Image (cartoon, rainbow, N blue to C red):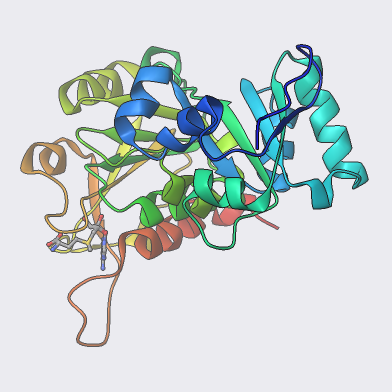
Length: 275
Ligand code: SAM
């Protein structure tokens, strides 16, 4: 069936799996296409609403005809259109194709990527940022972004080669927090130079540390540093930390999962600020 495309600004109805727009959006599942276009996709009305609230660049909203008349969907579509984005109505088969899922969400958004330059990061008294060195697992990264948002920490700095914060899996795991938590990407040397100049305290987490994580008591501007899932923190990073702490463990596990360890640390560092 041919697509019926209307005037710009109107809802475009897309029924064909071979429509070029479908192809372009579907390609965003691949990192290369995300890098080339500076875009990414996320599923669910909540994500679209979170992005709109935070004024994120939004290129398109796509939804299934079944939800067209739901007030929140109509409101989100009007907001996307008002910002010059495309409004696309797609059958569920087409949505399944662009999300690579058998049971797609009824609403999908196409967003612009946004990263904060490291030089703009200022860490205040009592504030906490998280630095993740070479994080590899998209689910861990998404969970950490969501936890950072939950505890009122200020942002996440991705150090070195890391997984893509704009992949499907990461975006899904953030549950919308991606739009509320500033993200920075940098190399290790640049990060360490910045930390020195910014006067932040680097609190590193290390399995061989002897300092108990419950004994860090200052409200100094803090960056919590977490290591890679397999290898932990690099030696350079470990050495550069002002304090290295361990979360004691009682059983036979070698270590905690990265996202869990980050959650435990963040709740400790933010203990005085949460009621
Ligand atoms: N084999 C790795 C190692 O020897 O470091 C395990 C890395 S662990 C799965 C991933 C990251 O989680 C660590 O680099 C550290 O940041 C944090 N982590 C996990 N368990 C921890 C614990 N008990 N104490 C402190 N940090 C921990």
